[in-house]
Image (cartoon, rainbow, N blue to C red; front, side):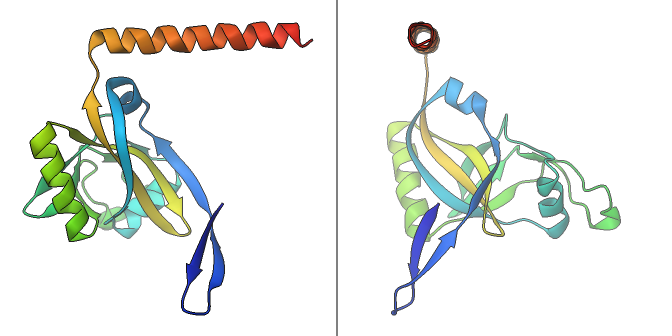
Length: 165
């Protein structure tokens, strides 16, 4: 649970988050150096489809065009009862960030050759939020090392579990 202070009187409210989907491919393909939270501009039928689980972040990526951050290649299935109000499933969607955050990310991406990748999509209260990661690509040997470390950790956990029985 996350706690936030609102107003001058210090009223505490609890924000609940519910993860919709995560981009597992991003964690396999990239080193995540930094992550930040962004709002996303959606239409009503898209939100309803997301609530039903009709979203895929697998090949999604972010770019900065004309001072705005755009989420590309995120697939949101058309809402079943949406009729004429459904939008294109693969349309570009605007991410909502402060201008200074966008400019800082643009400078980092241009200078260091990094990539902006959506890591997860979740509800925060009634709003849909995207966790965007500033990432560096992994080489093949990095992927192999990560897989070997994961297998070794699993073996250690199994051995400890067997020992504690």
